Each structure stands twice: as structure tokens, then as C-alpha cells.
Image (cartoon, rainbow, N blue to C red; front, side, top):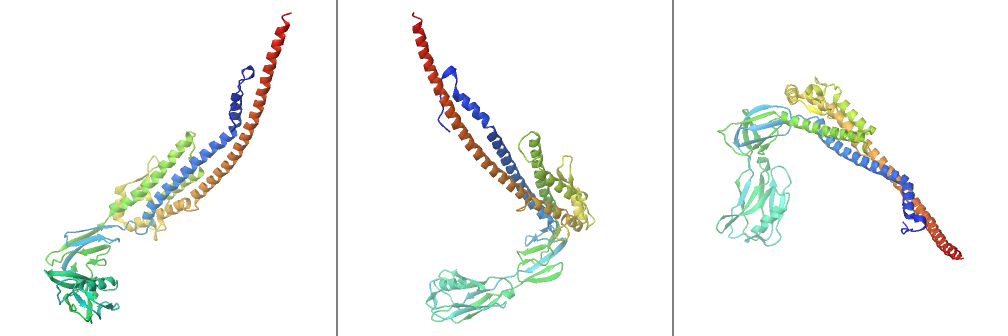
Length: 446
């Protein structure tokens, strides 16, 4: 912009105010463009918020769309010596578990004792550890003076070693090398071949052999190389903590209807959050504010989601979500009748699962909902395309605004020149008028 004009001139005309008034009027097209840009920016922000809410809804409904989403179990044990947790599945039941012995790892210790961990045990040769599970033998090669602690470090440095080594002080001034199997069970036992030379070799011998866990499950004898058993009770994992042949632990596996209810509630919450957002956008549009309340994309999304929820789905005895307690209230928000849902879960969980997810997780009501959400929310989807279109419109407006601003600057400069010239002309006229008045006054003397 040019420097301000201060006109005091002729007939009290303030040309600076005239310039400002004219430019304000001529700036009207630029103001309209600026308002259009603000509206588009507000709408773009709203579409971004919509995408975020759709992402939350997508995450929630995908958890239910899985073909085992409600195959949730909960388990308990009457004795702390037998821990239990669930891993999935649909089979419930009660199991009596008696643990006769735990699985243990082999322990081998040196028969030779040492006064310190720094005592030299060998200067050459090797120690060979051969796993009992068929894996290749592991050689620990010694090529120089090696202390007891260094031998333990060499064993531990080999990731393929079937045992971990440690130096243990069994009494004051008495040290032994101890090898402990990395895995429990008889199949994970190992043998030791000692061909070390040049020192007092450790002479390792087995002090505790590897052994399997032994337990009864509903009077059926079970052995396991591990104290963690995943294939004895369907859908549950047993963790053996203590052997106690005199104690029977009662393990109960029941259906976790509350877990399935929570999954549905999360989806309902995400859907209602989206519904509230759409309602707020509509109220803003009614109030004449910039929003996406009247955008056909938002209306289409709401209609598609609601229609999908209300559809009929075949495959099981339950064909509509309303039949298992999932519906809408008078305000249009989704609600859950927990009693009806849990009754349906207890009566026929397989049919409920079919209604929710279909056979393979891509069907059913929530599989269909996932398809709707992905159509709008995925990269290159309807929301993404709309935001790209708005971004291009904003860029086009910026270009037009730059052009109009440049034209206004040219117009302002031209008007300034005209008004300055007018002011100078009027100043000269005022000066000439004063001179003429002076001459006229002289004539009146005669």
C-alpha cells in the first residue's frame, strides 16, 4: 500500500476518507472470496474430524466382525498351585486337576571344586554339549588359559547351547560350575563330553536329571515337557506351580458374556459418537454456520450405517440385530439390551456369532458395517476424495485472491494519484482565490 494521504484542502474535503470508502467498496469481491475460503476450511476440518470418528468406529466394529469375536471364555482354579487362563474357544466345562510332579530342567555341576572363580580350568580342548532333542551338538572350544568364570561366559555366549552356565559358591572358598538346561522335560536333557586339557577340568556330572510334568485331568494321566499346558483343556492354558498329589484343583471354564458385551458396547459408543457429531453439524447448518451438516456425503454415511444395522442377515436362527438386543432409541442413538443379548449368547452363541460376523468374519451385520466404513474412510475413499476436492478449491481461491489483491493495489495507487492531483489543483485554486480577493479589496478603496 502507498503512503497515507492527508488532505486539508478545498471546501473541507478529506480525500483520505474518500479513498478508504471507495476501496472498502471495491474490496467486496475479495471479502466474498475470503469468506468462501473460511467456509471451505471449516468444512475441511469437519471432514477431518469425521474421518477420525470413522477410524474409531472401524476399530471397534472390526473386533466384533472377527469370526471368533464372542468366543470368549473365563477360567478359575480352586488352588493356587494350578494357574489357569483362557486363550479362546467356545467349550465350557469343569476339570479336576491333580499335579503329581512338575517338569524340571537338567542340572549338571562340576565334581571338581575351586577356591575362586578365577582358577584356571583349561588351556585347550573343548566341552561338547549334545541336546537330547536331536539338535546339533554344541562345541565350546578353548584356545588359551581359561578360568572357571571365563568357561561359563563362553558357554553362555553360544546361543545354541542347550544349557546356561553359572559359577556358584557352595561354601566359603568353594566354587562349582553349574549347567542348567534352558528348557524343562526329558526331551530337553543334554549330555556333556569333556576333552579339556591343561588344567583342572570341571568333571561335570548330572546332579538333577530332566523330568516331565505328571498330572491327572479328570482322572486322565497327562505328561508334559513343560509346566505350561495349552492343549489339555480346550480354550485354556494350565500353569503348574506346585506339585501336590494330595490336592485336587477344580478348574472351571465358563463363557465370558461380559467380555462380549463390552465389545458390543465399544462399537455402540463409537457409533453414537459419530451420530452426535453429525447432529452437531446439522444444528450448525440450521443456524447458518459453516458445517457439513447438509453435505450429501454425511447424510449418505448416516443412512448407510443405519440401514446396514437394520438389515436382515441369513445363516443362523437370529437374523436381525434387534433380536439380540442391539437397536435404536427415540433419539436415533444405538442402544443395547444387555439382558436380551446375554440370553441370546447363552442360548445359542454360534447363531449370535453368525449374525455378527458371518462364517469367515467378512459377513454378518458387523462385516457389512466394516465394508461401509471402509468405503468412506479408507485411503482414496469418499472422505479422502472430498477433502482433496476441498483442498483444490482452497488453492484455486488463494490464486484468485492473490489476483484480486494485486488489482486492488493497482486501483488504490491510481486513486491516490488522482486525489493528490485534485488536492494540488484545489490548493492552487484556493491560493488564486485569495489573490483575487486581495485585488478586489484594493479596488473598493476608490
